[in-house]
Image (cartoon, rainbow, N blue to C red; front, side):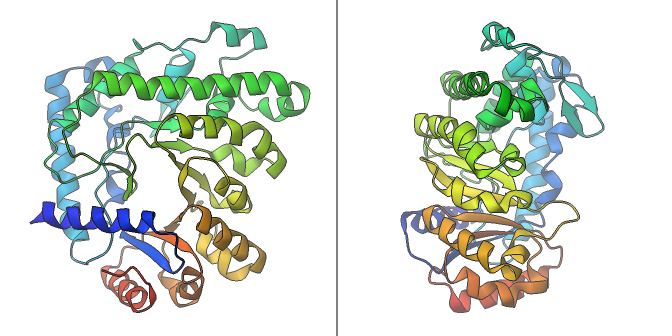
Length: 369
């Protein structure tokens, strides 16, 4: 029963992405799944990566993860919304930096981070793709153990990447803000290396795992095309539009067009970049994430006419995926949704409020079930 309903949602999402019409929206009841977002990061508080790199240990962890995921999924299926379960193996973005730079990852609470490794520009020549990194080997083993348990009931993503610029910034550190002006050619060389690194990771994972026939990719409740990748593009929220076009866009395009397209994540702080991101070749979804102690992106759109029109226009290039609790201003948001193509990841914790939003949206959207 659950598999059939998930297949229906996958088909509905694929129809949404195949369309280019406005007034089409996906709404995702995410509140019950938010709990699992740091599941594997928290395991690094119990085990070293070397201890985790053990099939018997990972089997127990993956089994527990899937039990919890399915418990939460049951709650999401109380309503006929559009969410598809999308588990991911993610040990935090610092482990990605560690794999790229060959430097140790440091755990601080529920965050994994690395010190910058590019102290001088000749360090770029020493960077190598290292398939023997403990984090890559651990990731592949954990991902395969997840795939071995697939029963048509989820759509996983193989890896969560830095965007090429985000990877370069992590390897170089905040000196990058000066480097844009002082060493632009070296920045581009490093960013290009990061794009190539991500492409190689995707190929390496594909060559060293076996996915079951019929498996679809997905991330954050959304079904993706075969080969599509997720990238964390946070740096663009701190730079100008011109810098985005020069130092981010060409290299993100290289990654997206060398794979199967991309899901691009950044934050409401940079909602002004929405139109720029929407022009990225290979872009499939643009996520604009809610920042702590800040208005949710949808609220910014409601109060700012210029931002509203820019984001609506960007959504017609590639759907805009928004996060947050939309209930307090949902009536004001509805007219905006009717003008574009949006995905709402609803993170409020009141089930009846979600049901009310779903009913209101179904009365006006063209792609209701």
